[in-house]
Image (cartoon, rainbow, N blue to C red; front, side):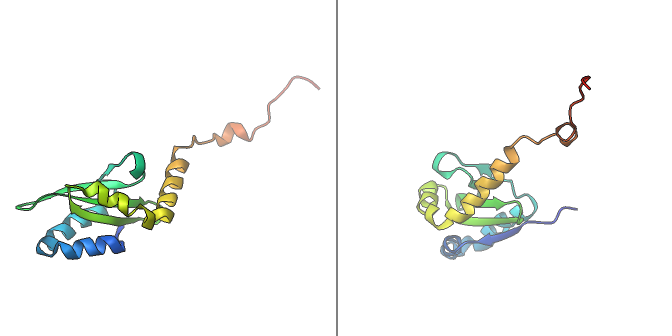
Length: 132
């Protein structure tokens, strides 16, 4: 059985959650889905590459988003921002400076994952020749 990821709220996300006090319980339930399915969100592009966005709906309140970094080696989902869909990505962009180190770690892991794997069996064997 796979070990669940840990979901942590960065300072900005903690503040966002406080502001959503009327629907806080529903938001927390949506965020805790990431413990079992950490890649549930979709990849963001351009300036926000490396960040995922979890889309969820709160009945009676509308569409919401949570921006997060998935740190696979540490098995952590670090929530950067939580809020309504409207102007959400501007909020995420405004917080990029706070997560530079984490984002570098995510980019390095993604690059490592995309590198072609070397075939150990053929790389370590010397070539045979017919020459004495």
